[in-house]
Image (cartoon, rainbow, N blue to C red; front, side, top):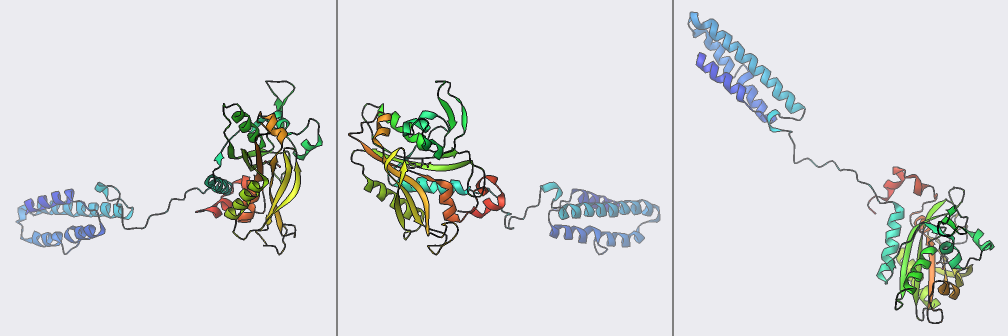
Length: 350
Ligand code: DAH
């Protein structure tokens, strides 16, 4: 009997329990009174008097060991580990979703704008945010000390290291990239037509409120080739508006003034919020302005070294925040820059 108890002790020692079912089997065999221990304790009576004490001690050890192991196994299973085999993973459970970030609404709209224009042959160009007076104003026909410069409240940064008389500033619009692009192309041996859009961040010294911010985003467009006319400008922007919004969105060109285009027009679309019935976004007019545009002034072409007799072009510029506001009804510009996740989460999956 002593041998039998010793063999069982070893069995308890080497047992591995990885699941509730195995734990129950272990309990029935080693812990329950109906298991091997019950039988052995009953059999103790039949052991010779001389050995009974020693066998009894071994039996007690087996009982305690079995209980201790049972407790260990059951704790491990409760806490999700099954001791020897690493974590108990139930592969049939549905996964806990990892929360991922969302795309910022301005990125979503910028990408959509790029996509629409790329499909009709425009490519994307880029330029600096810290700019010299010449690229931001001078080359675009803003005369020195002319009140036109007051149209855009400028953040001046420093005097230019190249020319002390020239200011460095944070660009007030993306139109600086027009100039850089035209200047670059005019230096090439044969002039290649330009058909580009230029998204980017711009800065103006405005008091921050729901309707104005000191930083925002624009997309500039430029098309320079032989025989580009106002009709091409209209066709292009009609196409854009219908793709960006809905096919039944109405568009109107309103004569306007920009120093770098002649003629110039502002572009209004039918209000996407109230659809014409009148709301405070469209100031009850049913129309919202989305872009400035026009035929590039020949003087601007000349400033960039392009033959204004041979080439013509159109340009336009629009605010990404404005388009996003109309598309997603974001009524406060500050929301774009606060990065409150409750705001950002609303654009999940778009
Ligand atoms: N740069 C103008 C602004 O920020 C927008 C603009 C108007 C851009 C007409 C253009 C244009 O390219 O042709 O207000």
